[in-house]
View (tube, helix red, strand yellow):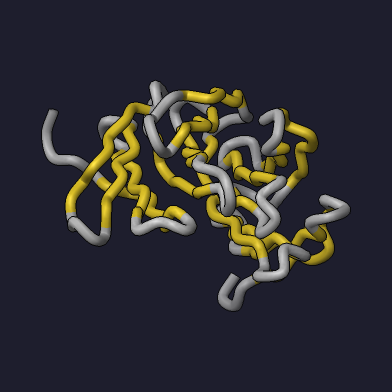
Length: 174
């Protein structure tokens, strides 16, 4: 089995828990900050689970799974798999908007972002990005989503409501 490789980490809202993804075993570990122990451990049933985000109001964690090209939707209380969502090639970056109604994921080898509705876990939009989009984050108000594109040294800025690109910023030195 070897050494565990913790990779993604996210605070579970309204709890004393932190969700951690171990990408070697493709599992989620739930760490209790009060007891300072791993209290839950469950498999994503996918390959190379990489990053994790938590729903802001529901007991749900989402993991991006790079080799499986999927997102796992899991119950954070018991690890039950709610849904496996099939995405494009090399699903990596993942974030949920502040309202909790949309999950956005990057597909590094497809140069796309996919928008997933979090009530029925369906992909509602695929958006082109720069080359090799890896990470993304929503603005605090959820109005914008920012994506780092490592293949062309840019940042893409998207209007979250319209799901359209509104700017591409070339980073200095590129």
